[in-house]
Amino acid sequence: MTETIIRLTDLRSDARYATYSPQAPAQVRTATGHLEDALARPLHDLRISVTDRCNFRCVYCMPKDVFGKDYTFLPQSSLLSFEEIERAARLFVEHGVEKLRLTGGEPLLRKHIERLIEMLARLRTPSGKPLDITLTTNGSLLARRAQSLKDAGLTRVTVSLDSLDDTIFRQMNDVDFPVDTVLEGIAQAQHVGLGPVKVNMVVKRGTNDADIVPMARHFHGSGVMLRFIEYMDVGTSNGWRMDEVLPSADVIARLNEALPLEPLEPNYPGETAQRWRYRDGGGEVGVISSVTRAFCGTCSRARLSTEGKLYLCLFASAGYDLRTLLRNGASDAQISTVIGDIWQGRTDRYSAMRTAATGLPENAPPKVEMSYIGG
Image (spheres, rainbow, N blue to C red):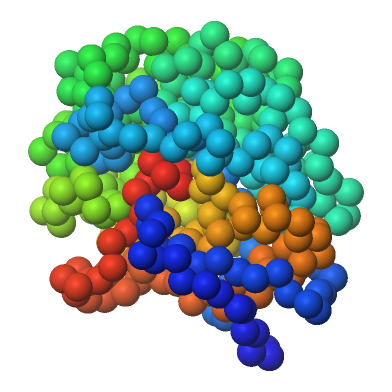
């Protein structure tokens, strides 16, 4: 691969997070429909954060002592418009992206998000295929919005749910929100055809790990695909500690004792979850093991923040400002070339480095918060 050089301006001193500002190139290249980074990982998925706001204050994502009532969120003018998001997504699709995931914060707090979904649903891959358009939500507003999301063209939905125990769930979301409303949203999503519905449970040792088996029993045979996620050191505000991580191997051991399992092959290269099937035919579960079993080697995901910064890793400490290019007259070909150059230079593999070193140096730069770029 020939070396690519991206002209950048370092905006570290005055940016919320470290930001590099790519300059519109004089020479442009045509997208080929396939783009690989420096470690031969293709660009396949784009996760788009549509808001930095959330109505929950989950302790591992937006703890209330940091994101309190005086916290300043981004003004509306800083957010990418739907037209800007659609334009950026179209350019990523030309480079090989086939899956778009809308995230937040809580994406259903973005007004008229159905209109954005309609716009994205009209995009096609270079071969003419429709995109897989998904959305991750805390489920609080899903029951009332499921039908309109489906009608707009949303393919599937993933719901974050960390406990079936109402007391624990209220403690973890830290806004006293009841679990029954989220379960109603999951049921409604299934009813309107936003499936297969996935449910993600972040497992924090000593907080909600006693609910692993009850969660599996609840969704066993329901058609819901349950995923258990290791508690991760995303951002710098959640007070992450390794002793609060319950390894996925332990999760599977607990599940297998109660509901015998057998392993499944991945659905596609780069799938984040290791999949298991219930031996009695009751469906499947998965584990996402970013801490104990890094999958950096097959990561094919890019992330576009609420205000148009491109991040190459969930644990990134710096992003690339695409909003300025989108708003200041850069052509599609110029922005496409910048995206290609950035991805081709990508070497990110945070989880593999952290796993190998059992923690990164104390002077490592701060990581961007998950609520800012989505999970």
